[in-house]
Image 1 (cartoon, rainbow, N blue to C red):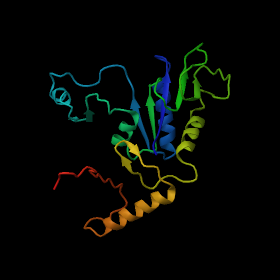
Image 2 (cartoon, rainbow, N blue to C red):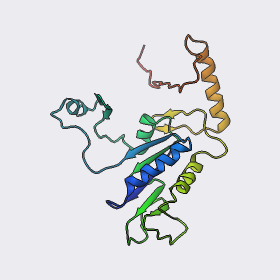
Image 3 (cartoon, one colour):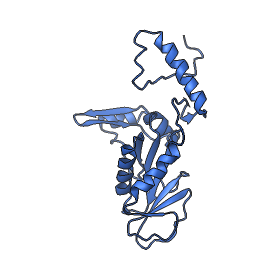
Image 4 (cartoon, helix red, strand yellow):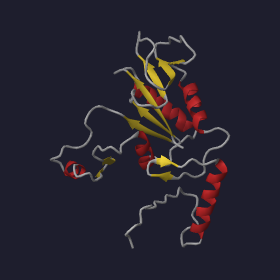
Length: 215
Protein backbone atom coordinates (compact mmCIF):
# COMPACT_ATOMS: atom_id res chain seq x y z
CA UNK A 1 0.00 0.00 0.00
CA UNK A 2 1.34 3.42 -0.96
CA UNK A 3 1.75 5.74 2.00
CA UNK A 4 0.63 9.33 1.49
CA UNK A 5 2.02 11.91 3.93
CA UNK A 6 1.00 15.56 3.84
CA UNK A 7 3.45 18.38 4.53
CA UNK A 8 1.18 21.21 5.67
CA UNK A 9 1.48 24.65 7.21
CA UNK A 10 0.64 28.31 6.83
CA UNK A 11 1.51 30.27 3.70
CA UNK A 12 5.26 30.90 3.28
CA UNK A 13 6.08 28.62 6.22
CA UNK A 14 8.66 26.65 4.22
CA UNK A 15 6.61 23.66 3.07
CA UNK A 16 8.19 23.42 -0.38
CA UNK A 17 11.72 23.63 1.01
CA UNK A 18 11.04 20.81 3.48
CA UNK A 19 9.37 18.71 0.77
CA UNK A 20 12.45 18.99 -1.44
CA UNK A 21 14.76 18.02 1.41
CA UNK A 22 12.63 15.02 2.41
CA UNK A 23 12.31 13.84 -1.19
CA UNK A 24 16.09 14.02 -1.64
CA UNK A 25 16.74 12.08 1.56
CA UNK A 26 14.15 9.42 0.67
CA UNK A 27 15.55 9.10 -2.86
CA UNK A 28 19.07 8.71 -1.45
CA UNK A 29 17.73 5.79 0.63
CA UNK A 30 16.32 4.18 -2.51
CA UNK A 31 12.69 4.82 -1.51
CA UNK A 32 10.48 5.25 -4.58
CA UNK A 33 8.86 8.62 -3.93
CA UNK A 34 6.14 10.71 -5.60
CA UNK A 35 5.14 14.33 -5.05
CA UNK A 36 1.75 16.07 -5.18
CA UNK A 37 1.23 19.80 -4.64
CA UNK A 38 -2.25 20.72 -3.39
CA UNK A 39 -3.26 24.26 -4.27
CA UNK A 40 -6.41 26.37 -4.12
CA UNK A 41 -5.52 27.96 -7.46
CA UNK A 42 -6.80 26.87 -10.88
CA UNK A 43 -4.33 24.59 -12.65
CA UNK A 44 -6.17 23.55 -15.83
CA UNK A 45 -5.50 25.46 -19.05
CA UNK A 46 -8.10 28.04 -20.08
CA UNK A 47 -11.10 26.63 -21.95
CA UNK A 48 -10.21 28.59 -25.08
CA UNK A 49 -6.89 26.73 -25.40
CA UNK A 50 -6.41 23.40 -27.17
CA UNK A 51 -5.81 21.28 -24.07
CA UNK A 52 -8.28 23.29 -21.99
CA UNK A 53 -11.12 22.67 -24.44
CA UNK A 54 -10.49 18.92 -24.30
CA UNK A 55 -10.13 18.84 -20.50
CA UNK A 56 -13.45 20.67 -20.25
CA UNK A 57 -15.07 17.64 -21.93
CA UNK A 58 -13.94 15.43 -19.04
CA UNK A 59 -11.21 13.87 -21.17
CA UNK A 60 -7.62 13.69 -19.97
CA UNK A 61 -5.22 15.79 -22.04
CA UNK A 62 -1.43 15.77 -22.25
CA UNK A 63 0.56 18.85 -23.20
CA UNK A 64 3.81 17.54 -24.71
CA UNK A 65 6.63 20.02 -25.19
CA UNK A 66 10.38 20.12 -25.66
CA UNK A 67 11.03 20.14 -21.91
CA UNK A 68 8.58 17.39 -20.91
CA UNK A 69 4.87 16.82 -20.59
CA UNK A 70 1.96 17.83 -18.37
CA UNK A 71 -1.24 15.84 -17.88
CA UNK A 72 -4.50 17.72 -17.33
CA UNK A 73 -7.82 16.33 -16.10
CA UNK A 74 -10.80 18.49 -15.13
CA UNK A 75 -11.97 18.18 -11.51
CA UNK A 76 -14.48 15.47 -10.67
CA UNK A 77 -15.70 13.63 -7.58
CA UNK A 78 -13.15 10.91 -8.33
CA UNK A 79 -10.11 13.02 -7.54
CA UNK A 80 -8.75 12.01 -4.14
CA UNK A 81 -5.19 11.44 -2.90
CA UNK A 82 -5.67 7.68 -3.38
CA UNK A 83 -6.95 8.20 -6.92
CA UNK A 84 -3.91 10.29 -7.84
CA UNK A 85 -1.54 7.80 -6.20
CA UNK A 86 -3.00 4.74 -7.92
CA UNK A 87 -3.19 6.37 -11.34
CA UNK A 88 0.01 8.38 -11.55
CA UNK A 89 2.34 6.85 -8.94
CA UNK A 90 1.55 3.10 -8.90
CA UNK A 91 5.23 2.25 -8.38
CA UNK A 92 5.81 4.68 -5.50
CA UNK A 93 6.28 3.51 -1.93
CA UNK A 94 5.52 6.91 -0.42
CA UNK A 95 4.04 10.15 -1.74
CA UNK A 96 4.74 13.56 -0.25
CA UNK A 97 1.66 15.77 -0.62
CA UNK A 98 2.40 19.45 -0.10
CA UNK A 99 -0.54 21.30 1.44
CA UNK A 100 -3.82 19.58 2.27
CA UNK A 101 -3.98 20.65 5.91
CA UNK A 102 -7.65 19.63 6.15
CA UNK A 103 -7.18 16.24 4.51
CA UNK A 104 -7.32 13.22 6.79
CA UNK A 105 -3.79 12.07 6.13
CA UNK A 106 -0.70 11.50 8.28
CA UNK A 107 0.73 14.97 8.47
CA UNK A 108 3.99 16.85 9.03
CA UNK A 109 3.20 20.38 10.18
CA UNK A 110 5.66 23.12 9.18
CA UNK A 111 5.41 25.59 12.03
CA UNK A 112 5.57 29.32 11.42
CA UNK A 113 7.55 31.57 13.77
CA UNK A 114 5.61 32.05 17.03
CA UNK A 115 2.84 29.64 16.07
CA UNK A 116 1.23 27.55 18.79
CA UNK A 117 0.14 23.92 18.71
CA UNK A 118 -1.78 23.36 15.45
CA UNK A 119 -5.16 21.66 15.61
CA UNK A 120 -5.40 19.69 12.39
CA UNK A 121 -6.00 15.95 12.00
CA UNK A 122 -3.17 13.45 11.68
CA UNK A 123 -0.14 15.49 12.79
CA UNK A 124 2.66 13.14 13.85
CA UNK A 125 5.69 15.38 13.24
CA UNK A 126 6.23 19.14 13.57
CA UNK A 127 9.04 20.94 11.74
CA UNK A 128 10.38 24.17 13.25
CA UNK A 129 12.97 26.03 11.17
CA UNK A 130 13.77 28.35 14.08
CA UNK A 131 15.05 25.51 16.27
CA UNK A 132 12.34 25.66 18.94
CA UNK A 133 12.44 22.00 19.94
CA UNK A 134 9.72 22.14 22.57
CA UNK A 135 8.23 18.66 22.27
CA UNK A 136 8.86 15.06 21.27
CA UNK A 137 7.10 15.57 17.91
CA UNK A 138 9.26 18.55 16.96
CA UNK A 139 12.15 18.35 14.49
CA UNK A 140 14.35 21.29 13.58
CA UNK A 141 16.45 22.40 10.61
CA UNK A 142 19.30 19.92 10.15
CA UNK A 143 17.16 16.96 11.25
CA UNK A 144 15.56 16.31 7.86
CA UNK A 145 17.46 13.03 7.51
CA UNK A 146 15.98 11.74 10.79
CA UNK A 147 12.52 12.76 9.57
CA UNK A 148 13.06 10.93 6.28
CA UNK A 149 14.24 7.84 8.15
CA UNK A 150 11.02 7.87 10.14
CA UNK A 151 9.04 8.12 6.90
CA UNK A 152 11.07 5.28 5.40
CA UNK A 153 10.24 3.06 8.37
CA UNK A 154 6.55 3.55 7.55
CA UNK A 155 6.96 1.88 4.16
CA UNK A 156 9.83 -0.53 4.70
CA UNK A 157 9.72 -2.65 7.78
CA UNK A 158 11.14 -6.15 7.54
CA UNK A 159 9.83 -6.40 3.96
CA UNK A 160 7.79 -4.55 1.40
CA UNK A 161 5.36 -5.68 -1.25
CA UNK A 162 6.73 -7.34 -4.40
CA UNK A 163 3.45 -6.67 -6.24
CA UNK A 164 0.41 -4.41 -5.90
CA UNK A 165 -3.18 -4.84 -7.06
CA UNK A 166 -5.67 -1.96 -7.27
CA UNK A 167 -9.44 -2.15 -7.61
CA UNK A 168 -10.13 1.29 -9.03
CA UNK A 169 -8.08 3.58 -6.80
CA UNK A 170 -8.14 1.29 -3.73
CA UNK A 171 -5.24 -1.09 -3.09
CA UNK A 172 -6.08 -4.72 -2.37
CA UNK A 173 -4.66 -5.62 1.07
CA UNK A 174 -2.14 -8.45 0.71
CA UNK A 175 0.33 -10.07 3.06
CA UNK A 176 3.91 -10.41 1.82
CA UNK A 177 3.58 -14.06 0.85
CA UNK A 178 0.36 -13.35 -1.09
CA UNK A 179 2.07 -10.48 -2.95
CA UNK A 180 4.94 -12.82 -3.80
CA UNK A 181 2.46 -15.49 -4.98
CA UNK A 182 0.63 -13.00 -7.23
CA UNK A 183 3.92 -11.78 -8.66
CA UNK A 184 5.20 -15.30 -9.31
CA UNK A 185 1.94 -16.44 -10.93
CA UNK A 186 1.77 -13.47 -13.30
CA UNK A 187 5.45 -13.70 -14.25
CA UNK A 188 5.00 -17.42 -14.90
CA UNK A 189 2.09 -16.82 -17.29
CA UNK A 190 3.87 -13.98 -19.07
CA UNK A 191 7.01 -16.07 -19.51
CA UNK A 192 5.04 -18.35 -21.86
CA UNK A 193 4.45 -15.41 -24.23
CA UNK A 194 6.88 -14.02 -26.77
CA UNK A 195 8.81 -11.20 -25.12
CA UNK A 196 7.42 -12.09 -21.71
CA UNK A 197 10.71 -13.10 -20.10
CA UNK A 198 12.14 -9.60 -19.68
CA UNK A 199 11.36 -9.38 -15.97
CA UNK A 200 14.06 -6.83 -15.07
CA UNK A 201 11.61 -4.05 -15.90
CA UNK A 202 8.52 -2.92 -14.00
CA UNK A 203 5.47 -4.65 -15.50
CA UNK A 204 2.13 -2.85 -15.75
CA UNK A 205 -1.12 -4.75 -16.35
CA UNK A 206 -4.48 -3.03 -16.88
CA UNK A 207 -7.65 -5.10 -16.61
CA UNK A 208 -11.16 -3.91 -17.43
CA UNK A 209 -13.27 -5.65 -14.79
CA UNK A 210 -16.54 -4.66 -16.48
CA UNK A 211 -16.78 -6.95 -19.52
CA UNK A 212 -20.58 -7.18 -19.68
CA UNK A 213 -21.82 -6.60 -23.21
CA UNK A 214 -18.29 -6.61 -24.64
CA UNK A 215 -16.88 -9.06 -27.17
